[in-house]
Length: 227
Ligand SMILES: Nc1nc2c(ncn2[C@@H]2O[C@H](COP(=O)(O)OP(=O)(O)OP(=O)(O)O)[C@@H](O)[C@H]2O)c(=O)[nH]1
Ligand SMILES: [Mg+2]
Image (tube, rainbow, N blue to C red; front, side):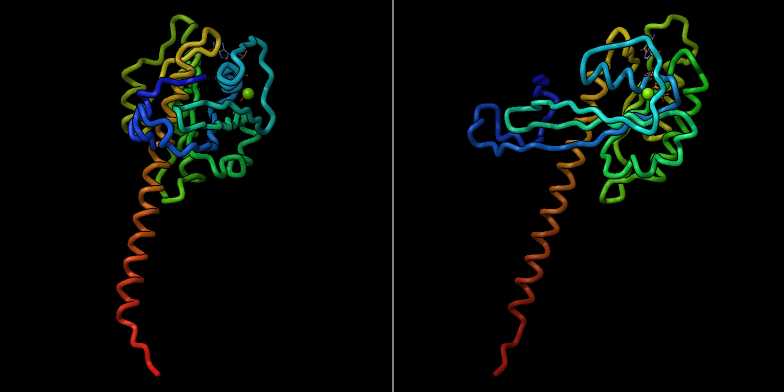
């Protein structure tokens, strides 16, 4: 699927008319999908990766992963690896292993079960304790308030917004895996954030290499050649 290019300002595009000048790149992002059992993580991943929904609940054991490839812009292909982590407590001890190398996370809660919103704090804490980016910064997180198709939910939007602000969660979306509401938007947001972070890291690394080279050149001049 070709996503809207407007969403990737500054991400290595050589300009809208200079397709021939861009360097084609293929990026792999590992994203986590976490949250309490039964909130709809598997349903969200399935909706996003193969456009289907099933109302049968089949508990996830350990973790599953699915892929989706996005032709992000003329130069960039993004391969998304979505890790659907079991929400049941008995699998909690394995999360450190599953979190490794992830560069983004979607935390899901079920709007029809308030307790699953209260658990978001616990999932976020677990995530931040066990995972950070190479530079030590926290990974981008998006919050999915799922099952918005079920009427009469009691979690108030302003409460979620305040919570996200307090906790440094970049965005949240009302979603429904069942009726396909905002699943693509939420994942697109996470890809944008991951691309921005990657871009900043590359810029920092190339600055460091340049500084290092300048330092070497400076010192090379100072070396006395004897004999
Ligand atoms: N109405 C409605 N039901 C949903 C939605 N998303 C998931 N469900 C249902 O909720 C139940 C649990 O969904 P799962 O995706 O299996 O939940 P999970 O978070 O993966 O659960 P674990 O694997 O145990 O951690 C299933 O019966 C789904 O059909 C939704 O957006 N709306
Ligand atoms: Mg599951």
